[in-house]
Length: 210
Image 1 (cartoon, rainbow, N blue to C red):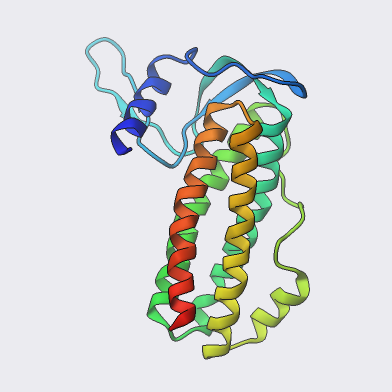
Image 2 (cartoon, helix red, strand yellow):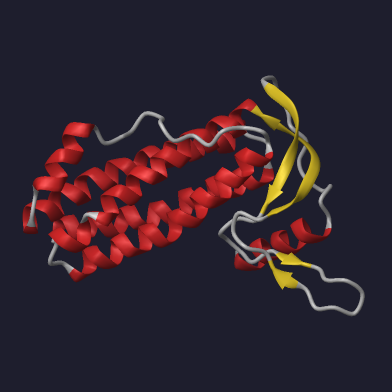
């Protein structure tokens, strides 16, 4: 799998036209931006005789012949505020939980989702869309208030319970993108969400069981 993703990164940098064409209805008829993601490194070739470089997450690499579909846009616009809420939850852990394992989990969540937010925001802006910041949230305001007030073991249990549900909703969104989307960057992001958050759900369930 790592080998396959590495080849994908190289292909993106060298051949901007070898991208899946959009299919179905609801396309916006705009060129699809090619944006570096957070998975395998994307190598941008240098000039004649010059070394290549690694693209930054969120860096625009050009446009493809594919068209942005409504499903692709919905996925990015929905996933950005979803990730932002996860970051908000993860930021509470350091001051409220004594668990080293939970703190490490929160750090991993932040490290994975910040670059994905940057990449999806850049992708939307390249497509002439505003980044989604105010979508519906899995965790309600009341639940967030309870989480903010909790401490110690009570916080740990509530955080894990809410974050598992939060991750499960993200995986549902990712499956919908894989079923209906067409843009390669958004499809790759959806696959990353499914694999990464699936692993984290298993870890959180184990922590919840004690």
